[in-house]
Image (cartoon, rainbow, N blue to C red; front, top):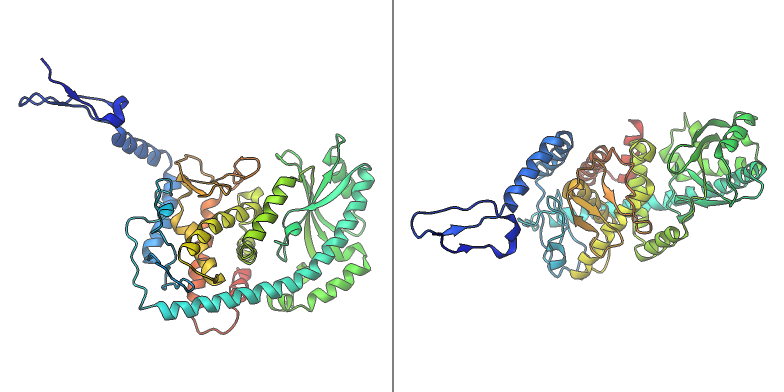
Amino acid sequence: MFKKIKLLEKNKEDIIFKNEKKQNKEFFLYTVTEKNKKKRKNKQNHDNDKKINKIDKIEKKEEQNNINIEVHQNSESIPSHTNSLSFISLKNEKYNQENIINGGINQEKIILNEDENKSKSSDCFRKLHNCIEEYYNILEEALVIQRKIKNELFNYFSSIIKIVYKNSNILIYGSSLYNLDIDTSDLDLSISTKEDINLSDLEKYLKENNKNNQYINVNGILTASVPVIKIEIDYLKIENAEITRLYGMLKDTIYYKKCYNSDNNDYMNKTNIDISLNSINNKQIEFIKLSLNEYPEMRSIIKIIKKILQLKNMNNSYHGGMSSYCLFLLIYSYMKFYHNKINDNKIKEINLGSLLMEILAFYTNYIDFNCTIIDPSSDFPFIREYTLEIIPTIIEPITKKNAAKTIYKIFDVLESLSIVYEDLLRISESDNNNNLILEMMKEYSKN
């Protein structure tokens, strides 16, 4: 009675109905792949209204900025930018492959009207490049002295820790170990011991021996996955002659004269110490060092974004902000993408101004963290996969766990960086001859 049924070979298991026609009695089997996708998408939209509303806001900003992208072909110069953005080369197949982020990089319409703005935008980004180099150099001048102060603090706390835990070794880790620190970076210490010890003993000792009120605050977060004692200290109250001498030198640096208010600079002598237990991962240390050797230009970009996040109170992972390590993984992942692009286009030098703006635009306008897994150890770090999680997914290269599991304020972080991008565009096109980065830092520090 029935004629032969035509099967769609690729989707044999998704058959849901037959459509009979009186003429020719031909039947077709239909797949529900696309319909299921729509149903799932509708359900996800319904269940995640708040998330999607935030994503929509970011996407609207992209439309308002009229971001147009050009495919750069065989360019031998630094990529020039329009007033908004023109940086992503997508012609190469590796950028157009199936696993690139859906809803991330716009693969459909890649058009640029570059000639009109080429000269102006090139000047703006060369100016920004010079400002980044100048900012990095004057910051490093101050950090050389600050690291000597932290070395004194390391010796001071090592002696205290050995009083409480006699058979222990104390090691520095974190940003101070890789010279990725900024002026407000914590000093991260790890107690290495084979004994079964409790950090509450050290917390108690510090609170009971606060001689000159040098410890402004001692707070043990002992129930966290990595227990830590967080200490805020006024290091001038330690009564260390070397620290006092170094502090005098620190106040005379260009960075502190330009970035700190001379009428109220008492917070210059305050810093935070984080003490944890057996938190050193040698493989992770090696990975970070090799990455910085591979992409040395990362260092200045990381420090600038890190400082901006600190000024906007978005750098505390304990309160949903972006941790320094996650920021490092994001920048490293983009550097893989970026170097593939510049190698394809035969670009011989890197403009730091262009690179900073590209990173800000890439993560605030082109990446949808709800359907993207970022795997820095992969040749192509950005993998398309939808997730209902509010937090982003950044695969830690050593442990293969999600390094971003505490960043529940990711949309606030992205919004802050989007504002930074717009502010940099605005001031880079102005006639201001001052350092653009320093000007922006001053403006943010007032808020």
